[in-house]
Length: 553
View 1: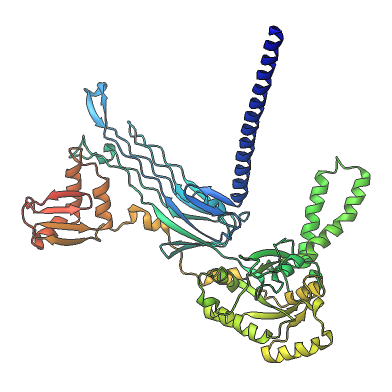
View 2: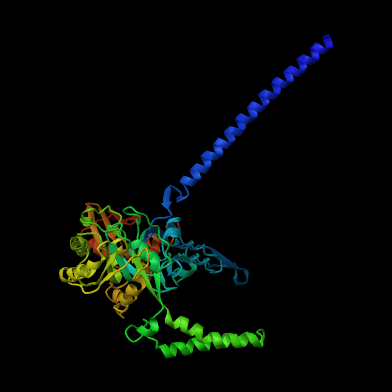
């Protein structure tokens, strides 16, 4: 009996242990799943954000502007060293080489990029520094240049000052120049100073802020009040796939699409491509390209495929010639008094509408205040820029599929023609596609042949030549000013003389001697004497100062 009792007690304790173990395991398991759920929720929340350092950048924003910090590479330091030749009675010769040049920073246009999202992820761009000079008059290694790819049609500013405009693919613009390398003592050998103990530091560059602004030159601009079907029309005529919903401000940012017109052969007489290539010449070029490709692959292609290729040549030519791309911008809703609400999402993007060739005013035909709505939108645009007064305009009445009184559509059109003084009024249904393609094709016939980009470039100010401005060789030596700080202190300011004071290594014995020669060549000490400088007065030039002396004057 005792054995049975002990066995029963052992089994009872074992069952309790298993229950506790299972409950602990479930608790741990549940906590594990809870943590995973929390992580998943955080991931879902952060899915539309990119974190870069302390900045949070939204992926779905309209990245048409960007600020980046750039800095050219510092120049390498020159060195002070000597070489001894045993064959010439152990004579010393100055042999210190100059430092390498600092790297430059360039902006390069890339048509494959259409926004500044990638640039915002970095924001700081530094070129490589130049290397130190070497013995035997060997120059230091040059710093590596930095190349930043940006979208084409981008304006470049620095402190609200126009720098340049990138309008073509692979166009390169210098925005920050690297510093020059400092001279070694080999460069200062003269008859009077055969073994010079003097060298220079490399030029130090400053970090600066560059503002980039992307412009969109479009053929058609769709504008109107919120929720009138602008994005629906864009989706219908292009493959934009923009989000649409039945509430105002579904589109918070401008959306873009490309409309492919397939009736270009009929329109060639009235609207030629901007490249001004005749259709026949263009056709011959395409045929020759296809024939060359076919000849290269002639050995690999069988006789049956050859006949098919010859038959398809004309079809490919017709497709290429018959289609022409037109860019379309769908602008967020414009409401009355938008110019007074500068924080509104639509207002800061109005600049992109300035470069649309034709503005399409879109209205809901079921709205009874179309004329008043048109005037409100027009006032907002004109107050932003007077260029909108001369823009070509087209009126589109949308949602005719749900308009009940369809017999009076002509009456409404005639009424609008009289009040809006515009004969180009069309009725469509963007949702069902009624009259959409026909309307857009007719609007396209009125597009000007002029190249907006060329007109825009001709009105821009003269670009800044950073190479000329930041190259220290171009600093005028005689342009300096002497300021009397107090009775015994004088400050000298000037680009050239301040740059020389910064790069000389005054820890070397002969550096002051060489620098004083520069001061005498510029007559600085003579001018100081003429304005009343006395023996022992302090003269300050940038980070360098010395005591004025009348000796030798």
